[in-house]
Length: 270
Length: 87
Image (tube, rainbow over all chains, first blue to last red; front, side, top):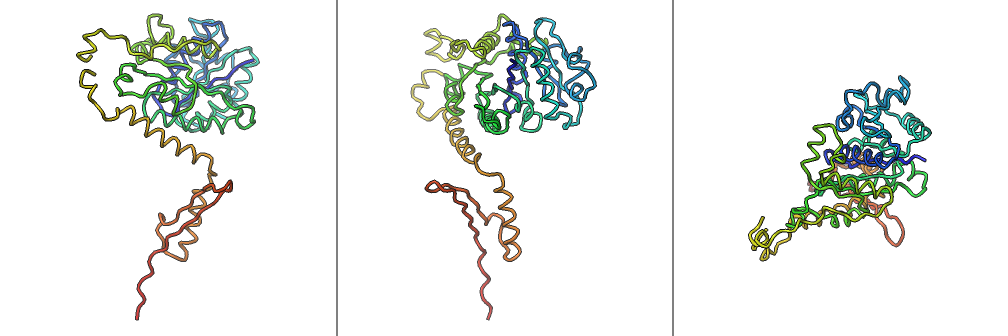
C-alpha cells in the first residue's frame, strides 16, 4: 500500500524542496518505489533540485487535465531506478490543481505499486499547500530554528489537524514529524539559536531529523544532485538517518552537539 | 564565547525566542478552536450599532470564553460620551 508523505512548512525558504528530494532519494535507495511530486504550481523547482529540468515534457497539471498519461509525465531518475519525479506546471492558473484531480493521480500511483508518494508542498497556506497535505498519511514539517519558521509551522500543524482527509474522516489524523534544517550546534551552545529540545517542546512533535547547516546543500542544488547523495556530507548523513527513522528504525540523533574543542580554544573563545 | 560568558547573567537570545514563541503559540492554539464566524459577527453587529450610534470600530469587543464548562459569548460596546445637554 502506498504511503503519502507531505513535506510542508508554512514559511518559504526553509528547505522543503531540498528535503523532499533527499527523502525521496533516500527511500528509493532502500529499494522503495518512490514518486516525488512538486505541488508548487507556477513556480516549478523540484526538477532543478533533482537535476531533471531538461527532461520535463509533461507536468502534474497535464496529467490532471488528461493531456497525457501519468506514465508519460513521470520522469525516471537517472541515478535511482525506483525513483520518479512529477514536475509542477508552470501555468499561472492556480485553479489548475483540483482536489479530484490530485486524488486521481495519487490513486493511480498507489495502484501502480508505488510504496511512497512524497508531496513537496509550496510555501504558504493557499490551495497548493492545502492539496499537498490533504491526502497525506504522514507529514514532515520542515523547520528552521528561528521564530517565524517555528510559528508558521505551528499554523501548519493546526491545518494538518483539521483540513486533511484523515482529520475529516477521524481515523487517527495525519502522523506529524519534525525535521529541523540549518541547525548550528555551535550557535545553540552559545545561546544564539534555539535547540532541538526547545523547538520540540514548543511544537510538541517527535523529531525525525536534524540537518546541520552545511555548504553542501548549496553545492548540491547547484549541481542538481540531491544532497543526500553526497557521501562526504554531514547533511547527507543526517538525511540518511531521517529516512531510516521514517522507515521505522530507531537511530540516535547526530550532529546536534558542538564538536569538542581543545583546552586553549575553550579558554580563548572560538 | 570565552571567559566572559561565565559572568554573563542576562538571558540568551535563544531563551528570549523560546519564551516569545511559547506565549504566541499558546495564544494562537487557543484561538484555533474558536468558530471562524466571529470576525463576521463582529462586523455585522458593528454595522447595526453604527446605524443608531456613532461608535468607533474598536469599541466593539467580542470574546468567546469558557466558564464552568459552558461557552460564553461576551459582547461589549463602549458607547461614546453623549454631548453635553444644551440649555
